[in-house]
Length: 325
Ligand SMILES: Nc1nc2c(ncn2[C@@H]2O[C@H](COP(=O)(O)OP(=O)(O)OP(=O)(O)O)[C@@H](O)[C@H]2O)c(=O)[nH]1
Ligand SMILES: [Mg+2]
Image (cartoon, rainbow, N blue to C red; front, side, top):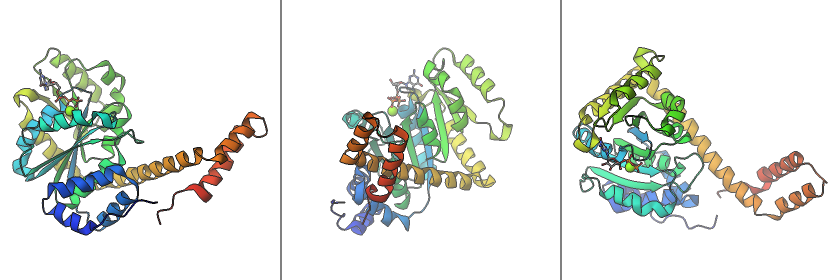
């Protein structure tokens, strides 16, 4: 590829890990842009990775995730020491960056040197949660941020991505559930380690709790997600939520489930990286004459579409896959 390598990468790392937010922000931007520079950062990260712990907070738009994270930071800081927050909106094109920026500024902890907050727009990459988010998490852990919280708007597939990226998954619901949530109930049951019913000051709390308990009844007691009620705007329930996160972490660490999850995370991440590269290679191939020729042949009835696909796949792997060197 034609991009320039990152100059003084190790210096940038040293600065980022020594607490220089500008350097950290630059590295994350490099990861967001992808390509050769991001690959260079990844190579440097490989030997540095020291694992921290990652908590995912997901839920429908407006469920109160950001408000909740804000009060959670207040609870968790004393235990964790330092907390990094990645606010990801998988549905947002870059143009919503300004909005995300506003959300970040809304955090009352944004000025603390023990808190790092970064919003990331995923640019519609494959698999909702951007490849870059996973890389950013690795970078933060390598720079000794012991707790990374990833806030993401959860719709459909995104929950599964959150599960394959984080160690404890918190799903935020509201009294009354939404139709959107109801439709995706099975998916939520599968990934949630902790359910939060936020906006517990609103009508319908008890019905939602009963509904949720009913849906969870089939799960063996010791694995059943905890349900926490919160009123994020008043800070109510934040202590309980942090306690539930700590308890979940303890349980999966002791049982060995955590290391299994991390194996799964690596597997999902590797696949994500490969899918992203394949997608790029396909884009390149589809912009080429080779595809136009095959399309013409299909149109004229000279070749069937499946055989044309096979021919193009051979072409893709033999010649089109971008080599990094
Ligand atoms: N009544 C009530 N309102 C709340 C509560 N928590 C959050 N809100 C309000 O709900 C609205 C959305 O809150 P956010 O924290 O921005 O929700 P979010 O899930 O981060 O939203 P997106 O990031 O846009 O998906 C805001 O107006 C909050 O003040 C709560 O416990 N009770
Ligand atoms: Mg939010």
